[in-house]
Image (tube, rainbow over all chains, first blue to last red; front, side, top):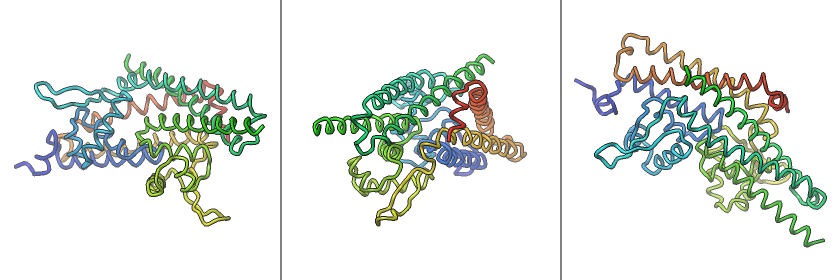
Length: 178
Length: 175
């Protein structure tokens, strides 16, 4: 006889495996917040995709206990940043969300991310140049030097992210070739 | 003269608004809500803020500001202190913007180190007889392999960055 928790679990994961999965979700959530300031709900949903790959909104509700609205918001974010794709389960109106292999996910994620970052980097460079050019008029305004520092630091951060993503793209391509 | 001053002040405000927008959009990749990212953005720009300042800048109610700050404290992103000259509570980022570039590679190394340990623990758990063939064990094995790919892509990229890009070495050394 199958235990109730296992029978109720999607894909019939064994309770012991389900416990391991919970540890994975907790690790994702806690470490994502600790090291990257990432949203815990977002990381929880992401963790379930890493383990189960294909999920419906209802599956995620059953697994995580979050409300339909909360899950819907995170799913929209994950689709928009190309981490998962949205499809339809044949002969139903249900949406099925899928996460591909990491190297494929990365290749989908990199191009739009690089475009956005490069746009911001250019904009921040121009803003910094503008602030420096008009420093004589603006210097007396409270907050000017803080703003110049913030623009400079943000531009450097965006540059670092952009360079990092370019390197990761190369590594992901290598992995795909293997 | 006054007119020029006003114009410059408005321009600075517009730049601040745009910076907030950029930080909000970058926060989207971290799964952060607009509200959370906006508060983080003002902390990034002004270093130290009070709840009243945030309410004025964002337009959110004091309750919303207070709850968001509480969430950010729980995440370990910000800290709270008392303004020595007043009675208000002051908030700042645990890792100040000026140190974030130096902090990032060190934090990432620690992050992936902890991941490797965790994956090793999972692998050992799956080796045990009573778990090895249970339903779902294959998915966990696949998960471990996937995470190893993610870690390898990221750490190799980081290593190459630090060795090959002088400007990044400079950023890492920046304090």
